[in-house]
Length: 426
Image 1: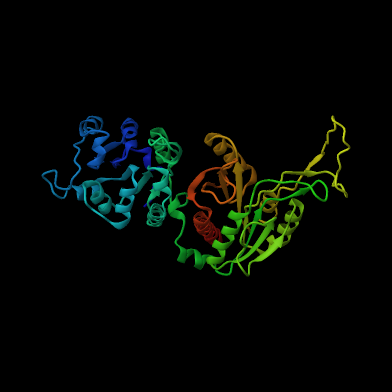
Image 2: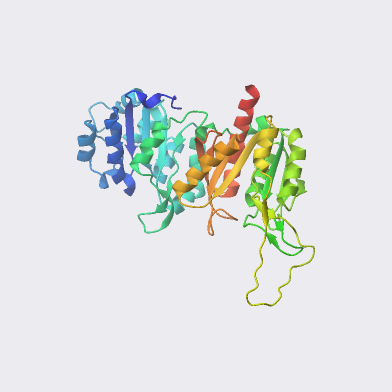
């Protein structure tokens, strides 16, 4: 199931499914926007969703009859006709309960039976409390649905109806509308992430290197300029590629608090210059390079041979002259065109700023894929939940992954396997 590049440029028959979450109150605005764009919209709410937005509202907006049960109308096979005529189905909000029903093939109301009978693209927009979204069962359901070809728009992080703050908030109607008009296809949707069996076939014996950790740029024999990266994500990515049968080399910077899998080939590169030299040496013999390390942009121009001491003066200051470190990712992209390159962009700021920084970096670096994540004092580093937005070299968003680093790493590796296989065929 996919959307062609010009799918919504002409009027379409769209089914908007609404499940029983409080965020249902936002969806009339989406329905109105789709109708204003020239599409014919049929709304199918679940019975529970009518507690938030009533049947009269949906009928007035869409101009179409609204029923919730399979046998609510005279034609007891209406779900088959709706599914046959639909050219796109959008489910928003998609609750945890509805996702579980779709995954298991349940057909206990008009919406679920229509989905089961549909052959058109289906877009799911999950919305629920953070704890429910991050639950292993929900994440497994979403992954299975991605593998089956469902297109999934990631929920937002923000204030929830419970008063809590976290991931699970339904995107605004305008954002859902824009998501549909981004025209996701098989090459830029989460459905492109291939199953484990396929990834294993594509990556078996392929040489992959992963940079990981945070570089330390020496000021003197004791002190250094560094960052808060632990290297945990890079190690998880290495594990994922190993699981898929690749020959993995881990180029690690100061990996002191992570468990490296036994038998992993590790090249220790404490500083950016050492990491640069290691990458330049190993890249010609590799097919894939994942640049997950947090590399310091600058280093001291001069390193003191002895520990720098205070002189004791109250007004004492210390001035460091910094020089730029080599750009490891950009150098690899430019020097080794055969290499599939995956860069990382850890950015600070609000969501809009992070997205803009990510687009600019993707275009500037030219890597095949760029994984953008928002970081800060409480996010991004260490054993925390992570959200990645994956861009291509043009800055176009391909897909998003969310969850623990151990859960995301195999998804990213499977996506890289697909890009690698496609590049081999071209």
